Amino acid sequence: MRTPGAIEDARWLVLAGVFVGLGFMTKMLAAWIVLPGLALAYFFAAPGSRGRRLAWIG
Image (cartoon, rainbow, N blue to C red; front, top):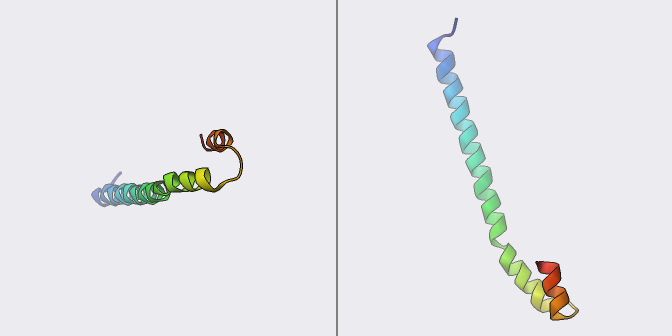
């Protein structure tokens, strides 16, 4: 037999999992923001022709 307290505890556990997941996705988004800058730095600073550098980026 289920008790109302157990169901309420499960809801809090699911809610906590949702917030942990959202925090992880926010952190990953912040990590992806720097990629265009890194690609531009590689494109202008790496040795080789423009075509070769562009091929390595994309």
